[in-house]
Length: 633
Image (tube, rainbow, N blue to C red; front, side, top):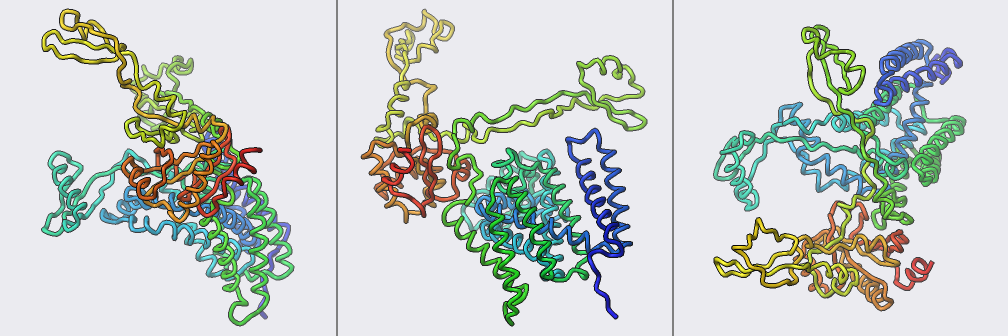
């Protein structure tokens, strides 16, 4: 007679104890590899590994695999749902991170090195990054729901293992990437394409003087070039998007991200090992597993200061269980459950793509006071250490050269026993950049490219007062040529009296004043409306009429309206002329504009530097509404 394995195994209390010991061991092992516990690493890792090994053997012996697999299902499922929703909340931002990984010197370099394939490239996927971003988000959430309710366990367990192996490889690459190493890259340039032909000519010339560049072959059709390059190291895996920075204050370090994935992979392996034992949840099990999962999701939502995942999870899990329980021939199964969760995810992603992330973790979110976010950085603290190595044992010791310990050791005299290796610059307190880097956010315009549109702003007029400084008109007594210089540059060494004669004091161009910036104006203005476009070439002109109407109404009411773009002067003038859109336009770094909003165009309403409103082109309000609901409050 066939027996059904129960979650209690041979002994419920013992298996509960072994599961707790296993998780404690996993926690201790993970802590041991964290930099914060470096001094206790040996103790934590040794104790953790012993507990994990002992409890794992005990769980197998006492038939407790199903119990630890169930606990793993709840943990993994909850994390997958929250992690997937955070990425789905900002799929465009996640696609930017994927683009970084698809760059030729990023993830592809590992494949080039591991498999000896210098021509391998992932750059093809850059153009499909957004689609891949959406797919990954949906798959992550669907797997999270299915693993909680016990749906299609064999398929789900295989997909979980594959996904976690991929994520672990990704974070391993991120944590071990060294920008100082070199890898061999091979590129093929087609001579039939003008741009590639020009690059090929450049590489051919470069190969004559640069040993890192080698021409592998050259035909009438193409040129193959091998080149030693440095990898492009991605410093943030993007596992939780901007949520960690926006809620906790910092992202996971590459090493922390790696260990997060190792822990999840370990739990997934338990699910995989017990896949034949796991059955779809019974009603009674759902009354236990689902509330526990929701409690864990609630805890994660509290960490990320976003409680929408709780509501979404309730709807998604109940919908998945409902569709499974109707027992319809076509969709009354766990494929139907996956389908309805996919539909829910698709609706959510459609909404955030059309408008903006439901929860904005970026510095330019509504309610944020921008000036403060330029000052919330923390300067790093570093210590220079002398590193010595024991010639016989290989032991390494680090000393602060000014410490009493170093002076008392006299290690520099023990040349037969110790060898000096290097000076190590050790990080004591990591540097934390400000949320808004003023070097990145600085809307400005060259004074030579200013038009009547920009000159109408008082802030521009006031800055232009610094355009001229006191200068001198000099006569070169030899050539009889007259020259004009700023007074501050004059000295008798450069302009001796017997060679130059001062003719007059005049006003000259200030050589240090080349650009007009409106950053401080945006931070201090009582009220200002700012439109943003990361690229005028990609500007959605369907919303241009609304913006024109809004700009005209703002001008009539005396509220400044400016457009900040990531385009060139020539593109700005062409855009103005083509669309008859004459407003003050300033230029800013395109990367920062991507952080401000994923939409193009987007709109910010600022009041004394605080973001009062933020809108995409699909949700532009009328000026009267802005004035009544945002500016007058």
